[in-house]
Image (cartoon, rainbow over all chains, first blue to last red; front, side, top):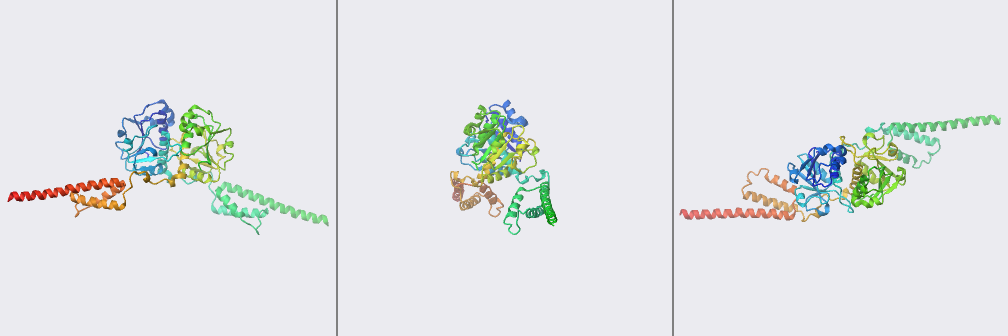
Length: 259
Length: 259
């Protein structure tokens, strides 16, 4: 998909936006940029805003008419504000990304973005197979040009990659997570320790252990952390044991003194 | 959610980015912006880039320390590049948005964005309950600050709204779509017409009607369009009928001439 999708900017006025678009594209893995009659290009401001995506600018194709930008494409998508569009098939950015991903398997797909102030003309919108709308807030609907490109490229990237992203990045964690069995042993150890320090009354346990299990499960503990917790419990039990020993010793001494 | 989420920029250097962030936020329905030690603020460039989101800039809160920006929050999320993060719970932008939406029901949530050049420090990342990463392309991982805010705010908005967005914007179409029954009558009309013009041989129909049905179904035709198509068929049939009549007439004349 990343190779077969091209971003087409129709008559962009601000070179800063062109640079911002180049960066947004490269961040998301896209590189095919076509400019239709840009007001100022090439331009230093575009280079500055592109940052490390200057290569996308350098390979950008400049053409005179929208038709030339889409001539070899078999699917064309136009961005459209809700309020001024002509009746035409229209999808939100997420659903449109799904269709674009499907269409890009069969050939080149063009995404048309209009002028900063007026968007695409009705004539240009009629060249499109599909219109796409980013569901912006009613209080401020007009997206900056580079932002609109960023959102669409991001959606396309997520459509392609999301299922392959790890639900959690376990592989980058610095210790393996504790197994359920290890957690069970920990809970038993914890319960015994709480009884030892007389915080938990086995005759009236209430919901104490349930609540603690829910808490620790939520934390998702790794093996190193579990070792620390187990060590704390063992040390606590040692104190309890020593206290018992001292009490017994005291009782013995007291008995001897009383004799 | 839109009221309880705040965007926190930690030591932003470029006022243009602050303005871009304000616009990105307002476009997506957010308005709570906190700036931690901004290098230049207020600034004309921020106002220019904010466009119609100057109100977000005007209400922005400026503080001296990150701790002050998040003091009353019960959930804090920090943006982190993959390569330099400390081991910490981390989710991609889409899964993080789901968690933020849930957490925002219980109180204020802060989203921390770091410096343009160095991101958040490890100390700042340790203040967070969760780290979030936008899955950028390996060839260019570093997102512009305002773009990162745009993507996260967009994801949050989609998390909140997506299920309520219409699958297709039928209500804005200028004519009702044709019913399945009307389409069936159209296909019968079409088939008869194709037989009439001898394009379709009923004895060897092959896959012609199947292919045509698949084609027209894909177009999703409205009632007005169907009337046009039906009118075209009727007119075609008239020509066929007239041709038959003319042929018959010719035969008769020929017969008379032959006599």
